[in-house]
Structure formats: structure tokens, C-alpha cells
Length: 136
Image 1 (cartoon, rainbow, N blue to C red):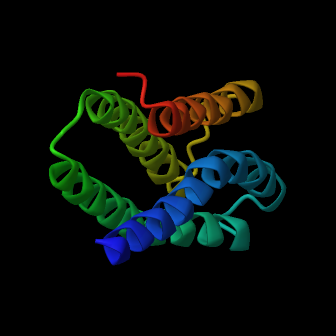
Image 2 (image 1 turned 180 degrees about the vertical axis):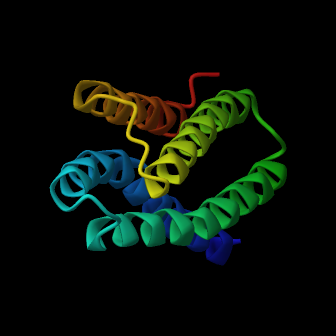
Image 3 (image 1 turned 180 degrees about the horizontal axis):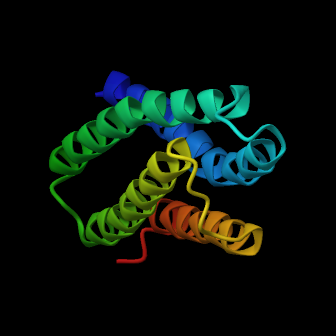
């Protein structure tokens, strides 16, 4: 079971990197697009990072469910899974922003993207609290 925990933590770390980095990269990608008028290297990097982390997200969620099953589904795990579902929704929304950016559509302001980026930080903190504190 320790290997499952190691894989889970490793994949969560990779997925979280993308969750924090891709919305921020969209800001710089938008600036690059405005300057170049076309899809540039930053856009390619952002798309690749998002795609790579999608696989990590699937593995992180699968191993997390495996661990939850092994623990017998205590109440704090339900809280954690709810928060992970919110984070997954945020990640899917980010993917929609990336798809639009690939088409050259940057509808959202830098301020929106900065706030959008910070939401994931608060959800991640809540997940860590639920895992460490095990409030119920």
C-alpha cells in the first residue's frame, strides 16, 4: 500500500503544478499572442503541460480512490473527495480556456485569470487541511 501512496503523492504534485501554472501561463500566452499575432512557443508549452498533467490527474484520482477504499471511507475522506471534485472542475474549466486560446480566443482578462488561479490555491489548502487534521 505504501507504493500506492507514493504514486498518489507524486501524481498529485505533478497535477498541482499544472493547476497552478497553466492559468498563469495563459496570461503570458495572451501577451505573446498579442505581440506575435499567432500561436507561439509559450502556447505550445502550455498545451503540452495541460495534456501531460491530465494523465497525472487520472492516476492521482484513481490511486486516491484506492487509498480511500483501503481506509474504509472515513468521513474526512468524503470531504477531501468533494474538494478534489471542485479542483477537478477547476482543471476542466482551465482546459476549456486552453482550447479557446489555441483558437486565438482570449476572452478573459488578466485579472480574472489571476483570481481564477488563486482559487485553486485555497482549495488545495482545504484539501491539505482535511488530510492532516482529519476533522471527522
